[in-house]
Length: 354
Ligand SMILES: *Cc1c(COP(=O)(O)O)cnc(C)c1O
Image (cartoon, rainbow, N blue to C red; front, top):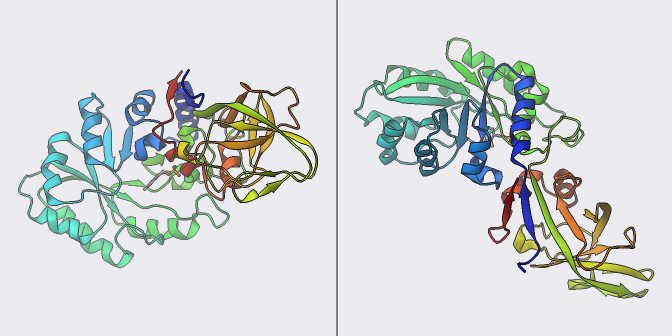
């Protein structure tokens, strides 16, 4: 018998979540599949999302892999190219690149081909991560518009607060002011903006986390949005301990029993991608019943309180996140976000598709 941990992937949920996104917008939908499809597997996700209008990721060789697998949609490199040597491959495989910095335009200057490249010019509207400052946009546009190699330009930016109360107003107004002289296509929204701010949609929305069935918001659940979780991380109880009052649990004894209780040992630890920072009390399902973790997560195992599930025993099913146990709740208890948990799923965890 293999170790009982596995990640079940519900590929129909990916399709469902893409339909949910479609119903929210008339813009084209770029499915963001960076980080190996948020930990779900690049080609597997692309295949389930083949109705998407485009794909966005980071790595040129992954983009080429998609082309070679037969995908004909727009494929966008979100961090653009990393060296002038990449340019002939962009042209050969018709990969669209973000242009976020002057050094990239300088590389283009030395590129001889004509009318072969589609680019997305990234504008820094306040996030200060990638993109041209408002004061630099018009010069960059002039250079790109005059460049013989450039066929098509889309204007893009990225929100820093679309999932929070502060919202998108400030950045959206900076973007509109800068984009207004140009008639190019526009893209600015991520999942949160797609769901909450229709005025941001433009020509392309870039949907990531929602496609995997997690909510980008703390105050709205995935279920409320009609999203279904794609990844369910499952394991089993492999041992049961009977604690007496005062018994301690695990490394550094961060849990101490204040009564007699049964606890279960689950075959899942931080080397599987479960967050070590998940505190005492992180919600978890045992045989379909919500209970909580106890003590410190170790490399290969963690502890659960069996008090609410008296019938649980060795072999009982455990759902760490996914169907019936929203990943956002686990993430919150670990001081992080669902994105990080999905992306951190370890290679050693077998994947089952369904
Ligand atoms: C990752 C990413 C997205 C997708 O964000 P979600 O919150 O997962 O929808 C969109 N745009 C850019 C530039 C990104 O890097």
